[in-house]
Amino acid sequence: MKILILGSGAREYSIALALKEVDSNIEFYFVPGNGATAKMGTNLNMKDPKVISAYAKASEIDLCIVGSENFLADGVVDLFKENNISIFGPTKAAAMLEASKSYMKSFLKKYKIKTAKFLNTSDFEKAKKFILNLTPPIVVKADGLCAGKGVVIAQSHDEALDVTQKMLSGESFGDAGKIVVIEEYLNGFELSVFALCDGDNFILLPAAQDHKRLLDGDKGPNTGGMGAYAPSSLASDNLFEQVKKDIIKPTLEGMKLEGSEFVGVLFIGLMVVNNKPYVLEYNVRFGDPECEVLMPLIENPLEMFLACANKNLSNVNVKIKNEYAVGVVCASKNYPYKDSPKALITVDSIPNNSHISYAGVSLENDQLYANGGRVLVCVGVGKNIKEAQQNAYKLCDNVHFEGKQYRKDIAFQVLK
Ligand code: AMP
Ligand code: GLY
Image (cartoon, rainbow, N blue to C red):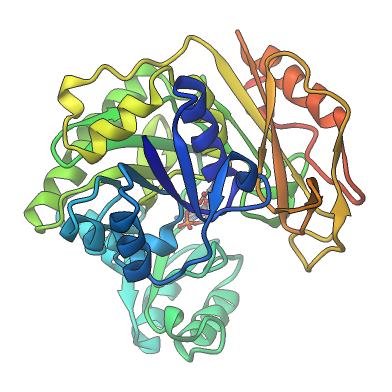
């Protein structure tokens, strides 16, 4: 079987690794991939979705799995469908749930799904009126994709007004900020929930928690994510039932009514306030680093991806192992501020129940080098969170590259 994976992160690496475990005969292709995926299969340097889908057709790819949102917003799924190639991911229209925050908020309102009180606007005076009626902190979001940087939690009315003005004028994020979403601040805990969807049916994967800040104790600047663990004991059965009934079901039904049924993985960023789930955001792909801790927990990932892509989820029993996983991101020296010098990676040994998922690495003379950004994720698996965490950190101690930095407290939320 030939599988094409779109993206270049540890997320895409972890998907390939999980699939390889269940079928060592799979031939992997990555667009663009990274230095470590080059060792698992063939990296292809393509960007244009038309070129990618023509390549997939010509080389008889059996399944394409889209890791990164950028390909989705470019409509790669629509092109694969035209060519009758199985693909795991939503169409361009369905990907709007992530690509436009104002579309997402209007959708939530229309289908009566719980979310923070908000206003979508491109008019500064309207924004000002709404802001002055809120009590700080006040959340200001740019409408478009801003690589995770388009959300500001303003601590005063003046700050909220200033940020809004800079977004609307195009100064902060260009066109992506020309519409803003102003939101009330929700005070609770965040949870990442993943629903695998085939358009009609869905199943929920274990809930995960990301660690967005750079430093221990949730201090320092926001990053792409410094670690994750799953399942989270913060997700009670009762909460899961509310998420299914009040969020996922109406979302999938709503998307169908909008004419853009959802296939792929719907990643819901929740804020849980007094045991009630509110939607902070939808993403239309796996979270990174959440994916790296979910993949090792799935017993039959190949069946799972195929069933979603081929609209056959009701006939497949996706089996989740009775285990826990913790992933610790090792980032380069200057992350997230600026580029870092290239550094050779050495690994002493891989202890039992742990593995590495590689992200920002290049391959030269059969050696892996850290290339900046998030470099790799040390994943530990165990029969409880503590054991999984210990296994992840044992592996971290065995991985070396100049400037390596990582958080020492991943999964602290459930190990207090
Ligand atoms: P988003 O990209 O919309 O998920 O926002 C990024 C981060 O900002 C979230 O993960 C939250 O930590 C925070 N955030 C967003 N919206 C709110 C809100 N209404 N209340 C509190 N925090 C928020
Ligand atoms: N871990 C958050 C994200 O992938 O957006």
